[in-house]
Length: 268
Image 1 (cartoon, one colour):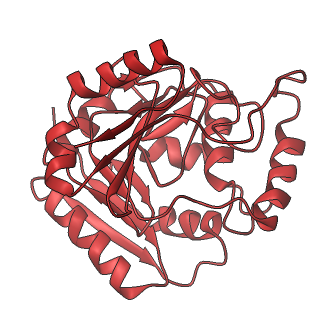
Image 2 (image 1 turned 180 degrees about the horizontal axis):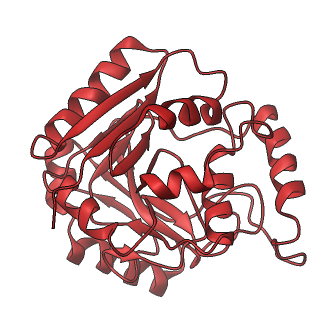
């Protein structure tokens, strides 16, 4: 099998964040042909991603936020192997899209493992089964979207409807699922996201557009939760986080959560 090439696409107006994110991908993909495409004047994330995609030449395209840090040295190998059997990969998502947030269906539909940059580091765990790659996903979070280039070109980002900075990700992934694409969530790759996202008035406006666009595919009688739920774990630094980001800890935490029926407060 030929070594695949990667195109990393980052929309960013923050020079420091863009530099840090680029350096992360340079380390991760040192053994793979790759390019980093920065868009610094995007009118929307959908527009910026589409514009960069027209320039991309990689076999695998990664649409990345500028405030993430991936800590797995085997990242390139894992993604290249998994995209032989999947069309799109993410780090958090759901097997059941019912409304404008991927997590609205709640557990056990939500899946993924993501750390957030707080003091201490805060780890969120949603249903990680089957480990390490959850299949049957309908929608994913947009902090990092990994796909084959031909899939990205086929689906594209709807920059007409989503002409801002919200819902581009759920629309892209749900549209792909509706087109028969196979989507998965990776649970075994340590990743830190510097933000928790926001549900402001702009998000609500694009949420209404998402529901209108996909209303024929959304369950009419679904009961949505109003707050994302999962397992809480805290760690003092990156080293402690990576040491515990293992199958045994993640799966045992999930089993304990199911037994208790509430969040865990785990300090390492």
